[in-house]
Length: 489
Image (cartoon, rainbow, N blue to C red; front, side, top):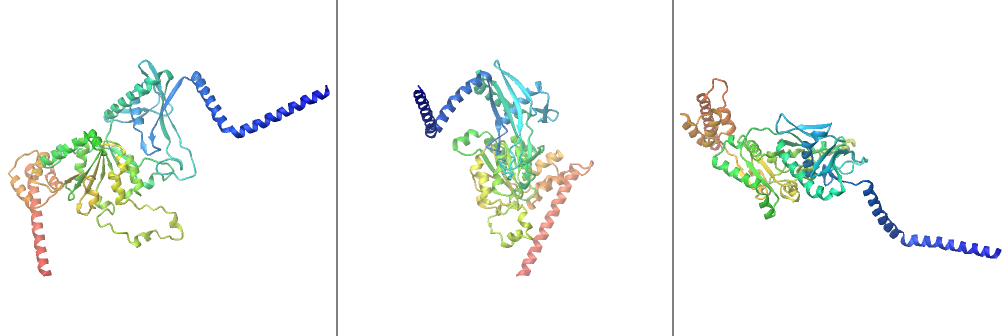
């Protein structure tokens, strides 16, 4: 009996050892396969159990998409849609200016929740934000990783699983559609200017590259002094662009158009931009190129512009070295960074490194197709100084010369400023305008009453006097030049 006991014990030990060895071998051979199998098996049961315990699904809509490169249209549309719904049941609201200066656009602050009804289903919207993860690295311009950046904002939609198809296929598209309608109704047009590149993250917080004010410029095509035929030509071109989404898609071009406005100072180039913006109901983004550090930063500026906008670079011939000459910088200019006592190594290089190539890619490169319905406008006083590659058709599609005041433009200004359509002095003004060049700004200034006693007679007399003085100056200048030429000979 004793032997049988030991025999039984030995058999048990052997079996145990075999079991342990088999377990080790099994784990070594099929560890990953088993984990995957049981993981999938348990995951399925976990999901079923979660559905029984929590029957709600959620959809999260973030403020930015593509990292922080582009603001989400869906987020803005949901925000606009909820601006009409949230005021009913939300206790804490955020207010922003609306198109009507007496009204406000309301939105939920973080942590608030609002219910919405649709075809018998109840859904819940929750607004929240979260701070980005902090690391010791420097924040890149797109806001991913790096140091502390601005908090991320979100909307999260909760709904019952049985309403999945209704919410995803019908309710959410309706929200976006109605949100766009609210945005159009409440939209305040804005004038943007770019912030210096080095201020985007100077205190560790990544910010938008743009700041803005409400755009309230009064200039329209109705008050723009220009030949009526040319004015109509420009307005027709703008109409074709605004309504050309299908055309641009059909021919395979980005939905954008370039305008080059050129002419002497004071001929109304900035006024033309304002009239275009008012006619199209577009925002304006005014880029100061000297504040842009690199081509990469220029792309970021473009990405952060919205559709239905005019992107303007004024006096582009003065902004950077973008002329046809494009000579290499002298070594002496580069030596401005010479180190002094080792301190210069730590200073930021704030000079602009935007190149002609970078600007060309900004206008019609791959990045220019990010978004649509944008107009790019360059203004210059010296079109002959610009590189031909910069202003060729396809980049600057329409060239508009803003010239000196013509007689037709003068009559338009006289009607606007003095409310007169004919006068004894009109013939004198017309004859003088054919002999001397005077800008629209100078003509308008002479037609502006200087006191309550000034009327059409005094203002037109002042204009004739100014034109005669300009004629005499031109003549004396020509005589002096002739005398100089004779002396040189």
